[in-house]
Image (cartoon, rainbow, N blue to C red; front, side, top):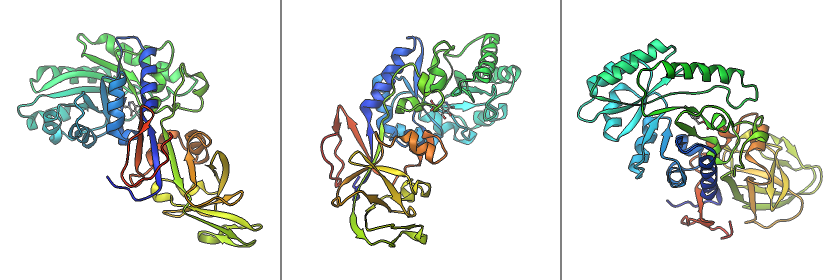
Length: 380
Ligand SMILES: Cc1ncc(COP(=O)(O)O)c(C=O)c1O
């Protein structure tokens, strides 16, 4: 792919490797890691993250929708893939043909899918709603009905059962424990178990003494980010953030006192000032709420002045800097957690928001993978 702009996201695959290996060391050997790479690996690049995670100790990947799963198969991922969201029963043959496991939580779905399925059997994970209120069967009897239907049909392979926690990233564990107890009791009542039982996301997986069953679904921690600010001080091992966002100054000007900057004249220079234009805006996921907030210019914090435009925004420089000077919007000085806090959201959303128009550059073994027409300095 060719990119003709000096705005890019850097994804450090060595950090992904570190985070997965740390999780691997933390878990007991009988617990598999499923690498959650939905939404283009939380904006990091699905193929590269999936490959790195699988090389580093994950044995399976998970995505949200069937399109993402098929895209990964087409890009060459051979490991098992689970679709966590709902799929359509008429697409069951497509999932089966690509050896993709799907999530099921309705008896009617199984009846319809069975009619569509042909030669390939479909791998099924049954989802239990123990308190998330999103997808899943709501009682053990409903679960057992689905289990019997799946077991009785030669067109289905019963591969897994799982649930999802709503509050694992909070210090108050009461609701989490309630969900865990319910899921555990449902699992105990089963007369036969599938090969995979999983419940934990990153936050639950990183709790020291909670039951992990035999697989976990590792998302945000694989990207080196804490599931919430609240539990960040208590994480059991160091996480290394993988994503940074960069651009380069494309225009520098000295403006006079009283000069207005950007749409709506919301910023007016209080004195003679150096103002630089950056080629990144809200169409890149660098949204308007970043107005007035800092970016890092060679390690110094400088503010975004005036409105963020669709493709550009302006910063106030402490002095003259030449065009081509690198600016870091997300990285070591201004962390993704800081950006999330200022935007009144979570780090997950900030990473996912960086649009497909921003090229991703991957660092592996401390080396940048070349991307045509992007001129970078070679020191990561
Ligand atoms: C069902 C399910 N499992 C696991 C995950 C991964 O969670 P986390 O990114 O908090 O590790 C997600 C992410 O939202 C999810 O929806």
